[in-house]
Length: 142
Image 1 (cartoon, rainbow, N blue to C red):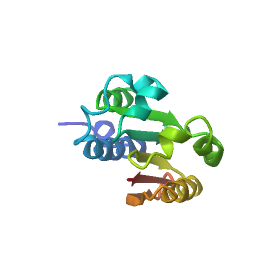
Image 2 (image 1 turned 90 degrees about the horizontal axis):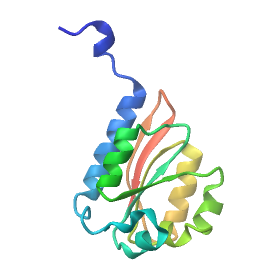
Image 3 (image 1 turned 180 degrees about the horizontal axis):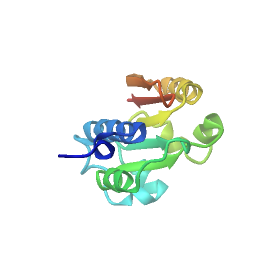
Image 4 (image 1 turned 120 degrees about the vertical axis):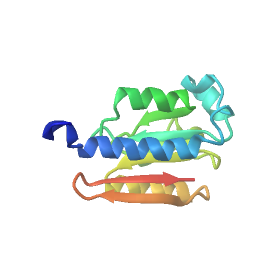
């Protein structure tokens, strides 16, 4: 029988597990389409149904989860302090592409900005959930 310490689950583990579940669902139809060039921006732009994980630095993504997402064809990008500048900067062709699915765990203000920017290219929120204890919004935009 497990002791009390082994039975407790942290909010971070629940948040990471939820994000992984969402990413796995989003990637199920396009894991093989993304190809091997995900590390380069050109390879990411060539993929028509790429999934981009926007990681807020306040919510650390465990290394094993990050590797599993990359293995499934997802591109993990750290969310910058100014999401609008990031969206319109060098990652513009990747983030603004209508076929790119966006997945993230961010605070409410960043979620609102990304949601508005994604709406400009015709994408809508498909899933959102608030983790009240940590203040994180877990979301999927496609």
